[in-house]
Length: 246
Image 1 (tube, rainbow, N blue to C red):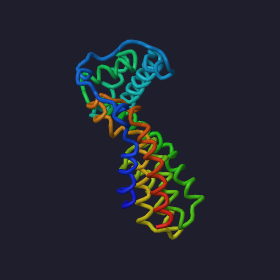
Image 2 (cartoon, one colour):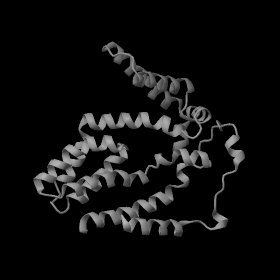
Image 3 (tube, one colour):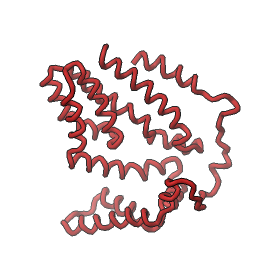
C-alpha cells in the first residue's frame, strides 16, 4: 500500500501531457445536440449503427420476458426495468440512437444505466454456469501455500473483467479460494485481500467507475485508457510482488 501511494502519483505526474498536448473541454460542447450522424470508419462504428444488432438484442429480451411470464413470473422492479430496457433498444433501432437519448435524459449517468444491467446478466451467466468458479479452481490447482495469494489476485483480476462487482465476485470466488487456503495451509487473510486487490486491479482496464466524470468533462473512455493501462501494469507488478514476498 505504501509503495502504491508513492509510485502511482509519481507515474501520473510523469504521464501528465505538456501544455500543447493538453485537452480542454469546451463548455459549449456539453450543450450541443447529440450527434446522430452515421459515419462508418471502424468495425465499432458499424456495430453502433447496426439495426440488426439492436433488434437481435431487443427481441431476445422480449422473448425472455414472454417466457418469464409463461413460467409464472410476477411483476417486480427487476422485470419492469428489464422490459423498459429492451423495448427502448428496439424502438431506438440502433445502439447509437439509444445512447444519444440516454445522454440527453441522464446526463453523466448514461453509461452506468446501460452497462450495469448487462454486467448483471454476465455475472448471472458466469455464476450459474460455474465458469467463474472453474476459472478460480484452475488457478488453485497450480498454486502452493506460498503462491496462492498471487494466483488468487490474478484469478480475481480475470473474473472481475466479466463480473465487475466486488460483492458478486466474492460470492463466486470465496467458496473456492477459502477452502483451498485452508487445505494448503495458506494465509487466509492474505488470500482474501488478494481477491479484493484483484477485483480493484482490473477496474483500470474497464473504467466504468469514471463514466460520470468523463461525461461531465466531455471526454470518452478511450481518452484515459492509455493512462489506465500504464497504471494497470505498474500496480499489477507492485501488488504481485507484495503478495508474493512481503
